[in-house]
Amino acid sequence: MAVSLFLPSILYLTFNAKRRTITKKIILEELQMSAEKEKQKIQKLVEMGKRVHMLVREKQLADPELVALSGQLLKLDAEVNAHLGKKRPNKSDGICPQCKAAFEGAFCGGCGINIDEFFAKPMPVCIICEFVVDENDVFCGVCGVKREA
Picture 1 (tube, rainbow, N blue to C red):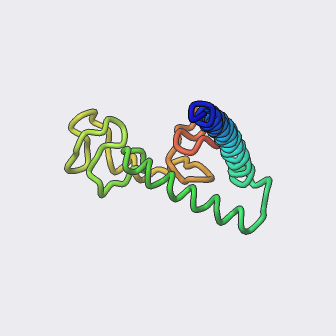
Picture 2: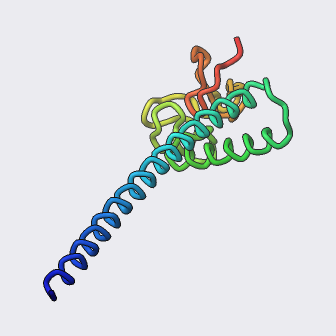
């Protein structure tokens, strides 16, 4: 008689263990699906943010809060680009804007350009990030905005 009482208990425990395993598996699958959907949502928000940022930079959106956020992003871009060595040339840096060699005096020892003349002439700059751009460039090499013709 003891065996017959014991057997249903084992079956009940086995059934409950399987049910818990199945429940855990379902919960895990739901969490993974939720995480994937959240990841997709974040990707879409980033895409939308990039598009809104571009529209603000191109002056197609003028919402004050968006303009302020866009300005903060431009400052961060400038800091990152300065850290990477992409910044507006400045005579006081002592770095030749053409060949990047260190210079002292009026001429670069690396490429020979007249430093004073270079900095005396107006430099075309991006209307958004104010980085110096080449006259022939269609887009800014720092922030990517299309240059005005």
